[in-house]
Amino acid sequence: MAVKDMPSPWARNALRFNYEKPEELNRYIWRLEELFSKNGIENDKTKIKWLGTYADARTEKELEAMPTFDEGNFTAHIKEIIESYPEASNEARDSIKELKRIRDAAGNITCQDLGKLQAYKRAFTAEAKRLQKEPALMSNHEAIEYFLKPLSDGFRKKIIDKLDIIDLVNPDAENKNRRPEDRFPLEKFIATAISIAHAMQKHGK
Image (cartoon, rainbow, N blue to C red; front, side, top):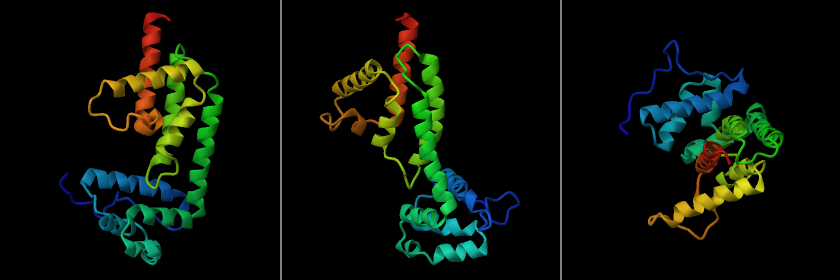
């Protein structure tokens, strides 16, 4: 992707972060990463520079003084920033608690419960995406285990069996001997679950 010009930090509607509102740090980072993606910014050192560009002068100096600033690793720098702001760290921990609450409240979902599964998917995905953004606080494997827990044993087996078949018929698939949780992304598990539930509803089984 060609690199485009990032928005001016002096523009009226420019993205901003102020040290007096630390609770907005995670949202600031999330929106900044959207800008990087939109404008083709991929270089870590460039990303690190822009982190301070849209912040107030005090925050910019604090970020530049962090050990990870000169190391040039964007993910490591983000992690250090978040860990230095209790408000941001607490928000991340709250997201994990919320994901557990969503999982535990879902109850027993069978492959016939399409409506219940769709509602669970919406709530679960919203929190899981936040936790899997870099620096990820939850691995793909962990997220899949969370997602599968409220599903019935039979439903889980159908999902894993279907994913195994996909690999068997795919000549380009690698690591076929590994567990599906280690071969497929969370999105694939969710899409497979929805597909199975749709098919069960269609056939009335």
